Length: 246
Length: 297
Image 1 (cartoon, each protein chain N blue to C red):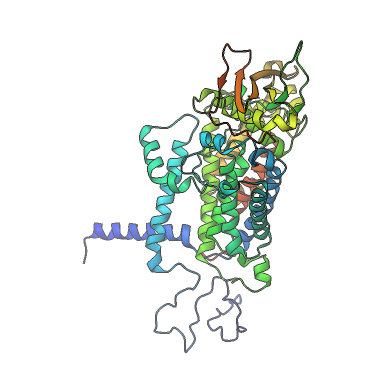
Image 2: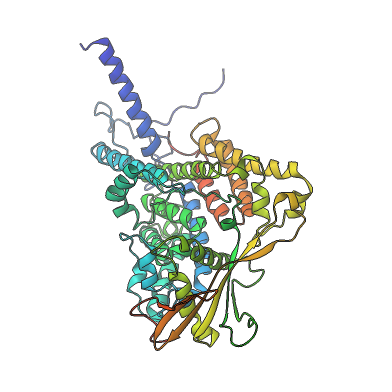
């Protein structure tokens, strides 16, 4: 008959302060729980707290579901958007938990391609002057470089939004005056376009996704779409450029 | 005595309640969560490093992402402790305090303070520059808040060394691990849904579009250009892996296998996708999904 280890029903020999054995039960020695009912597990959630904890958990699960359903690139229904924004966004947004999690990796579309920034003094005389700044640097595969690529892509995508259009290119220009040593800059966002799979052996091409001229005149920041537009419009009434760019 | 049908409904409700309790509130030791904590802290430090190099250029007094730019970008309910930083010195002070929090989290020092500090810092940093945020940042934010729930400093930590931590199983560890598992599954499922909206994931060429990007870390274009079958295979394998992961972590028979596969699979997907940090963050989530043999059941 195989040896059956006797369950340890008495832990009086346990060294003082030693933790309870994993999976073990509460002491049930002669002075222990016999006839007194189960001893509460100190690691378990108290019965009185299970209800509130379950309620909070359920609320969070609903919020998570609405975020996933409501924060997709395909848009969302008015109902889901309203419920999420009214009830969940006020506390999930500050925690950065209002995420759709729609990590698509790629759609194979132009906007999925890499973008980079080129900043040069605005054309003076004939020809285009060479770029003085490039973000990220060529062959920069770091996470830091990836943030610059996201910034450049965000500036291009924002052109479709009336509220955000032009804001980032102007800010990039204003922030680059000092580094470029000029108050009149051309900001060019270049997209690297991979070849189609059918022409996979071809080298990647590039295209200009956005090109603007940003200059500061009498303390006022001006954004000029390129090719030159007919009028020069002030971008921000109280332009925050009094102390110069970075 | 009650009616037989009401008795069965009551039994069903009791069984559901027990399943719910077992899923969310089972006391667990801190070992697995402590590893998640250490890895998340290290990943946070790595990601913070990628913000540090251009902190002034982005968020400084004359930086690109000025409060005016931010106003057009972020949600009205968003908050960031960086909003109070009007000088470069203040900006760096807040940043370094946050980095300190991540460091404390990595080694498990004063973990009950370090965990919320790191999570708050991370959310604040992302709210300060939302247009610079990548998928690894998002996943790390989720992991950090899950760590706030648990007692991850109870093992493999400075706290444990100083005997300031309790090694007994706790329901908070069980809840934290369950939340990590939930998010791991939801992120994988949401990624699949997003990818399936595009033709390239159906016709098998998505892997090509990932590999052909300038920013890719591993150049697989030669392999893919030479074999369409290989391109299709990698594309479909990524999708199948994500589907298997999203569903598999909920089944007790497949959970161990799929979670361990995630430790390798997610970093590989991250490398192919040009998002290695995201792959690493997902691998941390996969680690949280591995069944715990020493856990109380």
